[in-house]
Image (cartoon, one colour):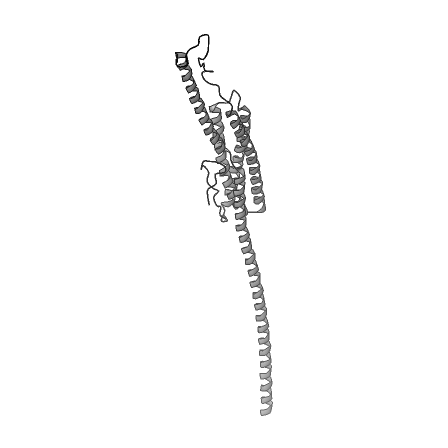
Length: 279
């Protein structure tokens, strides 16, 4: 299966690992609670990052907006994207652990998964707003460093076109410098736009993978439950057969006892007849 990158143009993320049904043991409950606490902490961190991005989006395009400010936004999104990916994987493991527990564990796992999906949806919405504002503010024209160039045409004295004085040479140099500056800015903007697009997380793909993971685990659980039901049925059938065999043996023993009694009585009668006859 191809590794999804959730909307990123950089292969930073790996696919959700396949979770196996955990063996029931004394450490399963402890592992469940440790994972639950870790996921809860991650959800809290994602929510804080969302608040920070929302506050940062309002400062884009203002005096506070500069390269360092946008680098911090980029770092926040990268870190949060990694946290979301890791948390989705942990939720898959938590769901698998809950499947071997009681109903209360399953409810806790489902509630935490819903909370995770809600906070990721909000984060994704804010992230798209940040990307839009970054693109919009980056599209604004930047002022030229040297101001408007003076081309040296006209004036009080007319000069021949073939004669280039010092003012015209400086003006041409300034034009070239301005063009180079604008080209460098354009290249930087394109690079930043690619970076912005790479930061935007495809939360729908994460939810899809998480749902597939939980569904696959549900299939394993259904198979286990079916095997348990078949075992219970076979056990009940075996008990019925043993009961029938026991009843058959009891009847057989009763018949044997009756036959033995009849034979004994017959033997006594024959003995008495012979005794009185010979006497």
